[in-house]
Length: 76
Image (cartoon, one colour):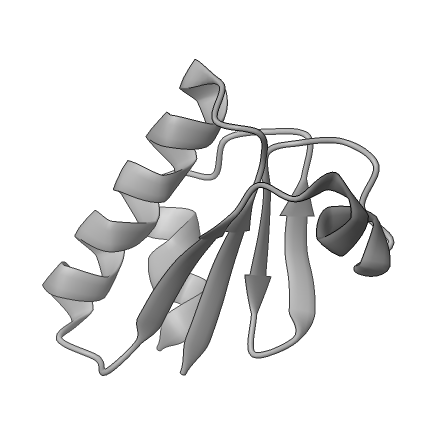
């Protein structure tokens, strides 16, 4: 599984990344979590608001911090 956290590194983006990592650890799934800060790569996903989360190429949330429970639903 490949999870990308899209954002420039703002506090909301950092919290999103932390929630994703906690959910992956709790679920016990094998996942590669990558932080994407390049604005051109972010725009390539059709995302123009951050933070955003992409799971296996599918944009799951844009412009808000997902809860750990949200992330757990996406990765199970």
